[in-house]
Amino acid sequence: MAATPATTGLGKAWPNAQDFSTNPNFHVYVFAMGGVQYIQVNDVNGNVLGSVGAAGGQFITLPIGLFAQQVTTPSQPAIISTTAVPTAAPATVYNDGQTTVTVTALNNGTLSLNAAVAQTTCDPIDCNIKGVTGP
Image (tube, rainbow, N blue to C red; front, side, top):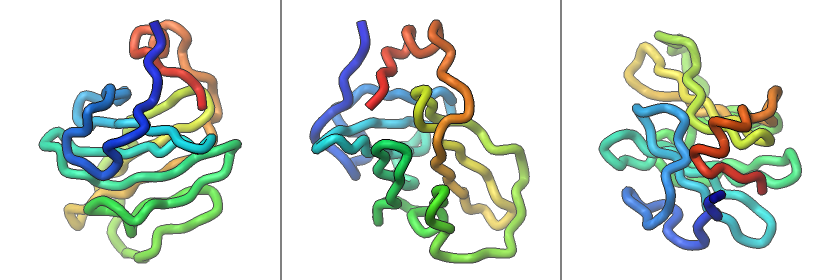
């Protein structure tokens, strides 16, 4: 049974919504309204890290979360430039076959989030288990 994105709770630490994360170190909540998917990434303690809106391959960074200014999309670089360097490879935290969100730890203790059009489709078995659906 595929889960439907929530319609309320965006910006909350523990929204009443399904966790779509593909990584155990993060929680990813998906909200939908007006044809736009709002993807929120939280850490394991419920701290909101950042969020993006996605529709038809277009993205917008939302001004919520500890690292909202370090969210990048194909059309929008991070608001704050930094000389920090990654300490590990990007971790995929969300992939619905159309949108992928990754998180990268930086050497200054912050995190960088990146949202992009998925380059590969979501593994049908994995997506089915998690109940992931497209927009």
